[in-house]
Length: 408
Image (cartoon, rainbow, N blue to C red):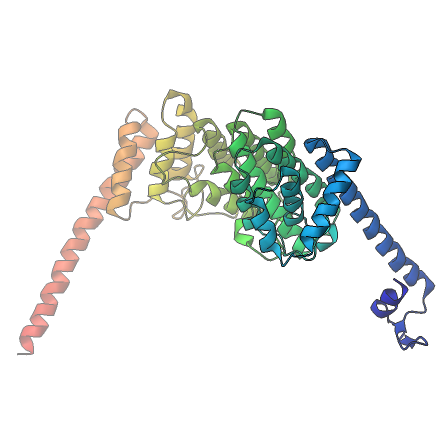
């Protein structure tokens, strides 16, 4: 340990008798010793917790655990890599041995492997998804897996937010969604326990500088999953609260960008046949976008990327009397942008597609004079422009033909 410290700390470039560099500053040497001692304590705690979990779930006595240790050590004599751990999971080995393999494969890092192992690859999402498929409906292994992830997440939460720890958090985060899907409404106690560890924001999971266009990527994964609706509603509500609370003090110093990314997460579902969540949640999302649009996001309605086809599909999902109010508020916001009637802030018809959407809306809001009159005016303006453009095109074509005739 002392030699390791001497090699690592060499600020003063002082040589010891054996030729190794070391730092003569006693305070720094003491801090390094404390660092390694803390790491050692962390690892011991992880090993202790994982072993206790193994014995609890599989009913192992101390003698039985020690016997399995001896068998495990003999198996490791022929160990050649992580592939052997994968093969063990599909073998006829007992579940307690398979649980050891799972704990090694899912360890957050090399420093946090709870059972003896020759080497370990970096944790990837493939490890998790493979294990989920392999254990199938084995209830004991599933319970071990769920509770092991809880232990690992508690461990990762104490680590510095470096590249690896954030990647591991992201992997575990996706795993939680998988579990919520598989459990459904069958075990809400276990689901709630795991869901309490779920992070909806990439700020908490992804690496700095990676996938910055997917700030709410974890939330999107949850929303598009088959997880129970209650968890989607809770996470989405928390995401909206965080946006409101962080206005002007965004974690990335760009609240407008966070708003746009939240909006784009919703937009991606508009072109599906059905929403992967309830119309009630969708209406809450739309109300939030209307009420909290950043002032600097101008253009039509909720931003330039919300075109007429988005308007059509949004209204389609806000069908029925229940959502009549929010439907009207959304359409008014898209058409008039809160009453601001400068050239870039209200709805224009530029294409046949825009015209068809206007016709659709006119059918829905015929009795609403404010909306209906505006749509009729825009439709009339588009038809007049279309006639004028066709006439200008004819004149231009005639001029071209005349020039070609003169060239003969």
